[in-house]
Amino acid sequence: MEGAGQLQSRGAFDVLDGIAAASSSRAWAVGSYENAGVNQTLIEYWNGMAWKVQASPNVGTGENALVAAAATSGANAWAVGPYHTGTHNATLFEHWNGTAWRRVPTPSPGGPGNTSTFWGVAGTNCGNAWAVGYYSNGTGNTALALYC
Image 1 (cartoon, rainbow, N blue to C red):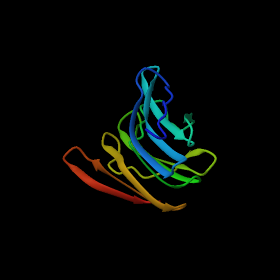
Image 2: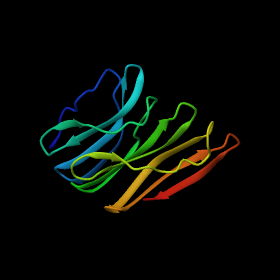
Image 3: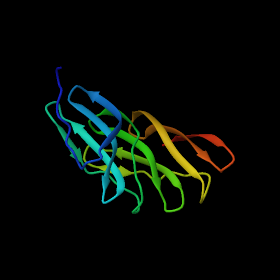
Image 4: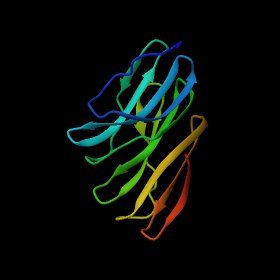
């Protein structure tokens, strides 16, 4: 298989849920890994030769995970998922600017005790990205879409 490579491991419980490629030498795989019993974000970068773990933001001390990714260039990639606030899941949106992954603050409708999460992301260029998911108020789910 051309371009195959062994991914790096952060721990015993690495999970990759999404992948995006901007070219044959720029791809990101996203997911989570267990760190001292708590899931944290995991981003691996393909440079055309090998996979390497990249530092990625985590919110607070609770669970964080990335479930989907999108990329348009080596300086533009996005990853989304949920993080746990201590009382509920909230939306997590991260952007790669060519140098580092940064968290982009997003609303999390539903409030304490309810769930908000992103499950998909797409983008066209810097400043033009969309994330989709849902929020729940305990009686049902409502579709959630965000333009960033």
